Length: 381
Image (cartoon, rainbow, N blue to C red; front, side, top):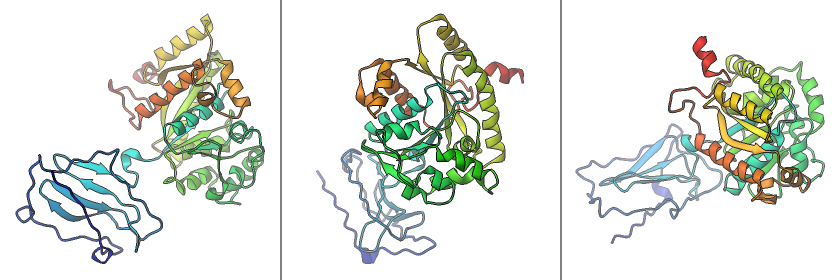
């Protein structure tokens, strides 16, 4: 049984602005290890070293090869400290330890959009955020709705202190100063409120008005795993900012005719954002049925939705449950207030689907899920 220890001495680490490279050992010169002798590391027990501000290495630097193992360092470090350290052990027993977010683990930003009120949009944001935080994800809720209901719940009824999202969009504050912690671990808030309506009017004549939120969130993309944005139920510069800032869209739909009619309008807005603004990769993550009740109308709406968008509609269905309203009045998500209630169970299932869907645009059968056009309509076109 072999025990391994890698000792790093700062004087031997050199870097330049253009990147650095360490001498590479030829395979014939490197000591060879049998795969059975190579040390086995488990991701859950492997250390992740972190540090503070530091000059960074650009790219990857090979420090040495040990048979089937290659030791690499990437994007790190501080003088006198190890900064953020990333190690790759490649080989038959290879395992990647990461100290920085890779492309596969990049922050996900999700907009909850509905151009109809009363669809459970804010409720969905709150409960998805609460469950993601419970699962260990770092979550930021962006309340871009002038009604400020998400802020009201997460701040337990207290008025948000300045600065808020209104100040950020108006250029009066940086986004880092406006983010507030909540009572829930790993869950933060960029609060909204009535001032957002005034800011929307102010931005009408400003340059770059559609890009204000996108630029602000880019500054904090390394601090969170998920950003969930609540939006107003009407089309405005606030809604456009949310769509331009987020990579994915979830559309809550209640079982009514008017919700179905609004889907086509939302598709047109998303198409315009892709074409004319910065967010060409904007895609539909899914449609979630909310406030479901057991009657013929609701059953008919669900059947029609699943027929029109077979890959887009989440299998999770959120019931109209009084526990969700009670949780709001207590200032917490239903997933923590009544974790065994039907609403909490449904949101827990929805979060699992969101995590599983990841960042893939194409489903197994080749149907695109980044559009609100039904497959039948696309084929006819």
